[in-house]
Length: 114
Image (cartoon, rainbow, N blue to C red; front, side, top):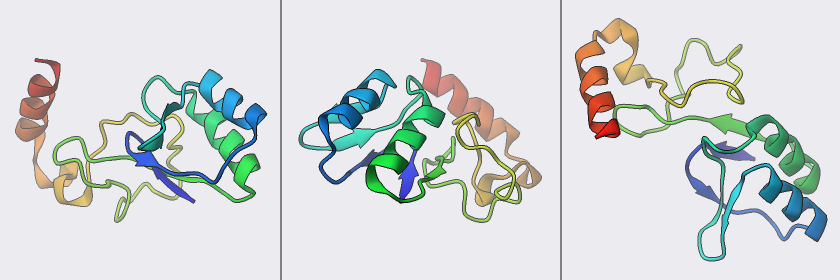
């Protein structure tokens, strides 16, 4: 299962214990939208809990800080990036540091804190 950090996703019905554990780990739940892992979540623990509950490996992905698209496809660091610890301020291949987007990154950052 693939989870995009900060996006809503669905899970099959969980037992009460698994659901309660996810809530303690900071996973957000909305009856209409599903579940969401965000900055307040203990991501490593939540991924482990979800994996055990659904019986499959959970893969995490992050969004590009500039345009919000999934940043992991095409990333040269994907093989050794620990997305349970990485900053959600990643850049997609289109906006990678090699493409000289520092000014755009700064502008997006300033807008996000305003």
